[in-house]
Image 1: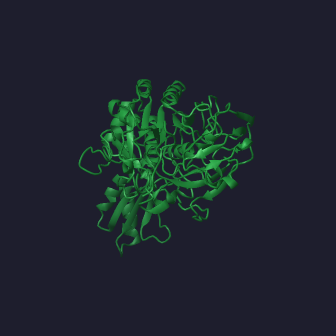
Image 2: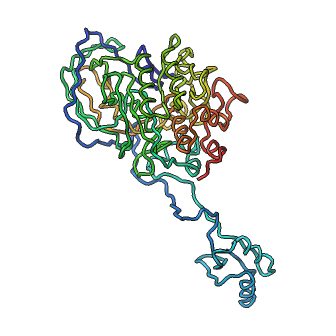
Length: 513
């Protein structure tokens, strides 16, 4: 059994394999100084977990670009004459049908007739079928393949393809507008190129191992190459360092942001659910390096509530909260969430990862049961069964892919781009090899948790909003109504109303491309 731990004693991040540290020495004045707003180009180190992947376009697709929305090609009818039909009989049949000429494509045992573009080809085909010399006739119906992105690692994203059928959903709606803003309330996002100076303090980790003070260190940051794009990020805010530079010192927020809106069909890396959204990085959680560098805040209910209000006031229409905590209720957070929904924002919250640790209540997720437009999300594995760690609670409302190492190893987890953990985690080496981190080196990393599941729901909500469904309650109702039932019939505490079904939700609402 492997355990999934909260980021700190005050606020948790619903993700496995996150290490926690607590500074034990007297706190020094917080020190973070922006040295320059550009940095060397990011380093993409490829796929993590020692899996060697050759960069390739693993999926091919045709782009059908035609001004017509008719299901067939105007002016064309396909016909096969019976064996032995003479040229005179063929010509007679064509004249009756109004066909001007015929051609036979290579390798075909049929002909394609040219008819007036104003004619109804199915009516022409019907006329031809009345002729006893005709074996069959039909309009030349267009075949448009499911939109399959050309991102070379898309074939490793079972969560998008096999589990959710995103290719079919994208055929209905790919989100043609970038005006929808999704706020990622998390550890920050790798959204900018910069170099910062920090002052590293001594600390003792949770195992009692002492790490020395680093003193002043220069730390490079880069925007994640597969997430960054023109005008991609909007209104960044950091409630841990009290400034406007919510750079990610953990990697969790960057991974989550990728599932929501990773650049897609760009011949790079992986895909995201709603790849035309704008992303608002709102840092409300402190990671291990924030602790080492003595950030002024650690991430409490106060930072969460402030972050919610900031996001809504600055235009966010979807809020992703892959965060939570144990303990008593959080009225300040509930108040902020009610105001957010009243202002037109939909919120997805992680249901929690601690089923195997006693299945404690998660107060943030519990709020969802009282507010229409806020949904608590559980996680399923690649077999679409509840992930072993995922909370079983009466406030679970919906399920989405979160992955589970116990079902399929690393390939059973969720793949996205984030920092290279060898250079970004606090504890990859013993104290003798301990040094300053780098946040400009990226890999495609497998992770698991209700954090990852929540990001899928936020992405689906953004797709719905991009088509004009503005009510948070209506979004929740649509996601719930068209979910695929799992577990016991109807709603249950493991899956809520079932697994999200993007294609059924979009098609069920009549939103057709």
